[in-house]
Each structure stands twice: as C-alpha cells, then as structure tokens.
Image (tube, rainbow, N blue to C red):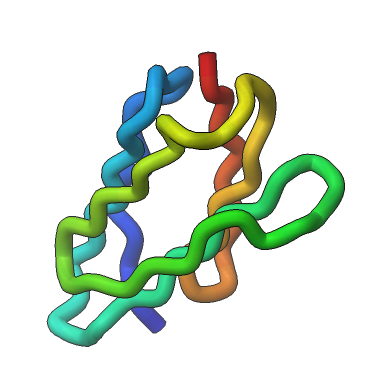
Length: 73
C-alpha cells in the first residue's frame, strides 16, 4: 500500500495536490457528494488534481483505499 503524506490545500480554489512517498503509480479519484466520480487521474509521488471546473462544495478524494474530504471554494 502506498503511504500518503498529504492532500492539500483544504479548502481549495481549484488545484489539489496529493503527495505520496510511493515509487508506484497512484490512482486518485474524486467524487462529489452524490457519489459520482468527477475526476480520475494517475501519477507518481506528486499528483495534481484540478477541481477548478467543478462546482463549489465538498468532494471526496480517494487515494488507493483512503478517503479525504476536500472543500472547493
């Protein structure tokens, strides 16, 4: 399992950064409060997730099997 170091900033105006210390490719998925997947992106160590096209509100960011709540302002 990948060790996740951080998901920031929270709240965000658009960009969210997911930092891991894994050498492997990490899958990051973003869900809205209705449970609909709005973004899916992969990357290594530092993954940038762009929420700027999404409406304001709460999003759930799934990194591997961990979940983070993020607020988009």
